[in-house]
Image 1 (tube, helix red, strand yellow):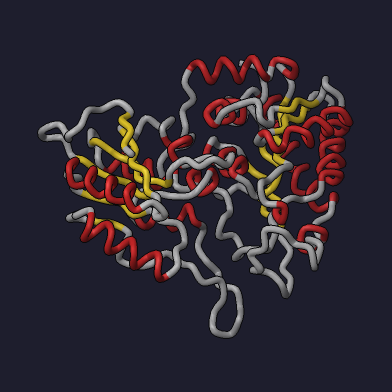
Image 2: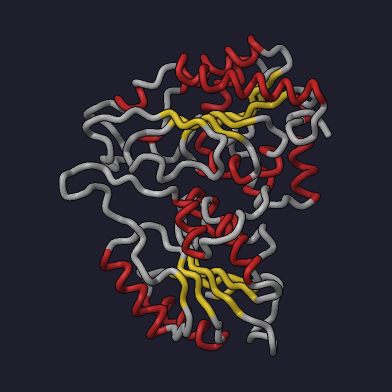
Length: 376
């Protein structure tokens, strides 16, 4: 299946054509934004096509849902290994479009998946030049002694795949259009004029969710410590009920629930009006980071340490290492999420308080670089 965004096909004469392969869901896509902006910088004026997984019936956000808002891509081709006819259609589309180069920005893949992709893109699709297929992205979690590997952050790894030299692209990595800005401003009207703290208490994966009562305790400390601060809850529709509980407990004058109320680009516009982010390791956390927010992130230890840390260097990651770290469980029933249980309200508050103080200093001094959460 091929969808055009703004350009015609076949490739206009004389215009370079580049394809970018990136599959996964919301967080997988957002961490790739620095690398994708680097690709756009390397190929100014090129026709750029995204190759990504096809939309599914679940509520997961696809790469195209995010990347179509960048203005970088002219179209999308969908990649589905469970449907041979669709793979054939993808190969024929690549051959017809005659792209000059493929950037293979795959998330971690098994050896079998990696070998399959090499054959498919080099032989079946006929790409003459490929960046990123020289070495398989890391997949194994542990070394021969059973110790967890220390892996690079996924956002850094992808940037090095594209080009190891040069300064990172400039934040933010999504530019909301006027309609999204207007909707975000309207939705935030109940807390307009306050210093806004983004809260992400949800996750589609139960093993990643810190406890709601602890988020409530942190949120209460924020509004009690800073009389003009307000909490804005972000997340998907599945997080709506918990967001309502937080608002009810704190008060509608000091808290607002946007979970499920915005699409991706509207969420980006609303996050850009916040001072910083507090929450779980989710796509919302990554979106906050690429919009320029500092993050206080509560991490499970189910994966390798810091491999999915948010983009940027000014974040605080809270994580506890245990013998069972690296379990990759989506539900932790035997240990009852002990790695998260060991992170206390005081731990999170100790990380939040400096960010809260810094945000108020910025607001008091009226410095544009640090002024966020004030209606503008």
